[in-house]
Image (tube, rainbow, N blue to C red; front, top):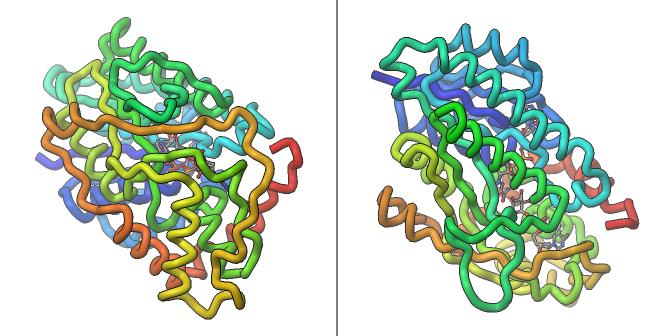
Length: 352
Ligand code: NAD
Ligand code: TDX
């Protein structure tokens, strides 16, 4: 029988990819719950909005009455919890919304969901799943060698990653203490369409198209492990439906790159497929700026548990995925242009 899936944060970058994946690849009914903060955009849901299996609800995950009503009304079988404040630089200039949404909001959601789950008929109660979507940043930073595994101790360094680590612990505690059927995923850096232009890849693409300075923090030697958002969405559905209860699964695409390599790759693709750049080519716009406070050196994921246990593998390789992403930004200025001012406003704060 087809499932009803509640996606929190479904108007965000990854949440909207999850909604597209569910509508396009399953017969699930999808309810998207999103507060539409600066990072939420209903236009990111244009491919699914018209589908009769899709419903959008504007609400705060921490609004107990609204969520209680929604759960009673829609009776979800699976909850995929993505709603969060997600940008590290914003967490450095102001941590309050990260504590409020990522920690307190997740706590309230877990409690509201627990009350709903307790009242479910036995069969539906046994099959219910709550997927808590998290990040590899909870593990802290790596040196030049090694990978994060599911048993790597938590050591979050930024206000963002500390708030996500706290919410992971809450989700885990609700499984161990109350038996709520929770699974947790920890993913590396995503890239792809509808990515808010405050984050590295869309910021560099959209700023380059304006012939602006391309800000590389420090010397650009920090390493991130990139995964296409559609590969992440597919992995999340596998973990939500087939992951073992109380377990966590790392998700990553084995695509480690230094930030400078990523920025240079974007510039050379734009030189080839983009509109005419500045006289010295797009790379002449690269500008080294003050480093992020507490900047984690390297993230890299060992995804072998997900690959061997659940049979997941990434479909995109980074080079073709990056070019497809650049093509998307070239064709979809209507989407990113209205966000550009909001995205850049945060960087006027000199404490970053
Ligand atoms: P995003 O900032 O693009 O989207 C977050 C969404 O949550 C927005 O639509 C926003 O409106 C909504 N939201 C925020 N506060 C809310 C609240 N109180 N109630 C309801 N909705 C609220 O984030 P993203 O990059 O799509 O990340 C989604 C999730 O995946 C987050 O939990 C993040 O920690 C995690 N994650 C992200 C990445 C990445 O590379 N972007 C990697 C691993 C994990
Ligand atoms: O302008 C920039 N210049 C720059 O050099 C920006 C915005 C970033 N950077 C660097 C900082 C990081 O080393 O690029 C790297 C990537 O930065 P972000 O895109 O801000 O991502 P990151 O901080 O790594 O976090 C992302 O991945 C993990 C997401 O934003 C998180 O939500 C996710 O959990």
